Image (cartoon, rainbow, N blue to C red; front, side, top):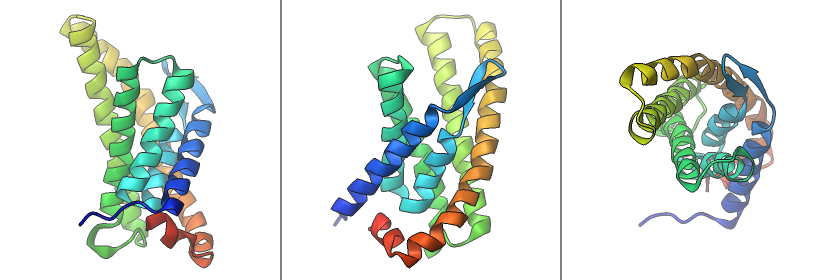
Length: 186
């Protein structure tokens, strides 16, 4: 039988989604793209809350930003939801593997690396599909566009890989003492 989300988990999903959305506003241009720490918050959601709740927080927060302030259509908002959900979900699945419950710092770093690279791969796939099949650009032009977006995507990923484990390590003891970490995870 599947475990249902508790009311407290739903509230934490909303809080983390709001943080993901808010952090997305703090961005700066670099190499033809925008660098921000929203991906770090997505990974932090996975570390704090686990797979499904963390994925929902990451997906809803990023999708909310794209829908309200990003100027994207419904399809792109849904793609954002799925890709950010998977980023946090993959991170959580690794961090919680073997009953570790995100308590192994080395495993958490590995989880953040794989989660962030999962998002980069999905973003590059989306770029390829849109450029080639939606817009109809020749393959050579598509590769040029993808190579143009890759540096900023990797910078975002590296920033997230560094920031998320540091934030988690700083927050976890206080959340555990307050009994909130257990409530976040259900």
